[in-house]
Image (cartoon, rainbow, N blue to C red):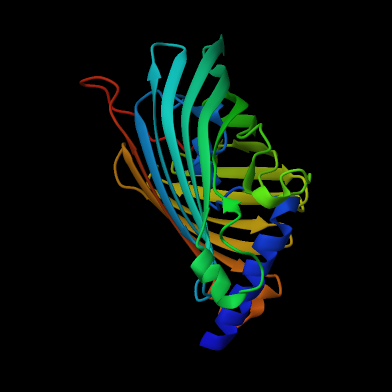
Length: 314
C-alpha cells in the first residue's frame, strides 16, 4: 500500500514538473458559498460587520503528497460603501507549496433598499516553492537545482458581486497576470524556459435562498471555474437550513465528485461547517483514496455595541 502511494506520488510529481507550464488551477473548495472572498474581492465587507473565515481542506486522504489547503480571510465594511480585507491562501501538493497574500477592496452601490452591486479589487503576491530534495528522491534525472530560481510574483484581480437578502451573483478573476515561476537561467533566451505557469482563472458564483416554511430555508448554489489548459469545473449544491441553526446539504462536482455538507450556526455570530467529497473518477475508486474532508469556521463581530448580526445563509 505504501509503495503504491509512492508510485502515485511520483506520477503526480511528473505531472506537476513537466506539464505545469500548460496551466495550474487555483485551490479547490466544496464550501465555496461560505468562502466567497477567497475567489471574489467584491464580496469584501458585504456582511455588514467585521467577519473572519478560516478553512482547512485535506484532499484525497490516504494518498502520499495529496493536496492540502488552508485559507484565512478577514474583512469589514469601512463606512457605508467601502469594504477592506486581508486574504491568505496556503496550498500544498506533493513537493510544491504555494502562498497567496492579498489585500481586498470593494466599493458598493445601493440599487434599492434591498439590493447592492459591489465592485472589488485584489492586490498582493504569490510564492511557489518546490522541495527539490523530495522531487529528486523519485525522479533524480528530471532537473538540477543549480539553474532553477524561485520568484515571488505580484498580482492583482477584479470582481463584481450583486446581492440582496435572498440572492447573489458574482463574476471574478482573482489573478489577472499569468505569472511564471522557476526560470531556467541557462535557457533564458527560450520562450518556455520556465517550469511552472499560473494561468488566468475565471469564476462565476451564484445562489438563492427560498423560505419553504417559518422553520426551513433552502439554498441552491453554483460555482463555475474556467482556466486555460484544464477542463471547466462546475459545482452545484443544495443546502437546507432548519430554524436558522442546522444546515445539511449535498453537492456535485461535474464528472468529478459527490459531496455531503453539514453545518451549525452556533450563535448569531458563529458558524462551523464540515464537508466530505467522494471522487467518482478512476482515482477516487482506488483503495488508498479515502475521499476529501473540509472544515470551515466563520465568526461575524457585532458592528457596534448593542447590535446583533442576524444569521445569513451566504
